[in-house]
Length: 158
Image 1 (cartoon, rainbow, N blue to C red):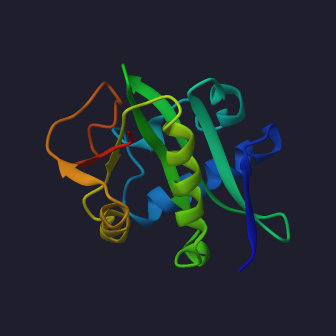
Image 2 (cartoon, rainbow, N blue to C red):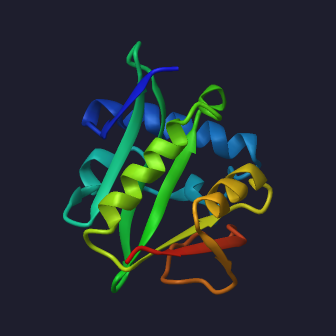
């Protein structure tokens, strides 16, 4: 599967929201305390446009979005890997790896560590993060409002 990684544009907002909501439904995360309740799900092109905050999408050759991820400032010199979701058919294609690599390379220019939260039943995602050097931690960093995300990771960027 061929795709490109690019910064989100206004035309992508609704499709990214749909990918995230479908993924949350797939994993039972369609409730308060997860990204499901985030008021800005349909505004990523607006909120991820300041230094240190960015969102990328993986776009297939046919123009359809395969997934996306973002970097957002969390607390001091710690950022958060945010809203990393892909369509089921994009999993295992390398798109998630390309998105993660893009996000972490960007984050290195602004932050010392990158934090993330995920659901306990997203075990494939957890293995993916661990393979990429994230280590599991048991404390929450910052106020993400994602209290239903039981699994937390961090990686040193510098």
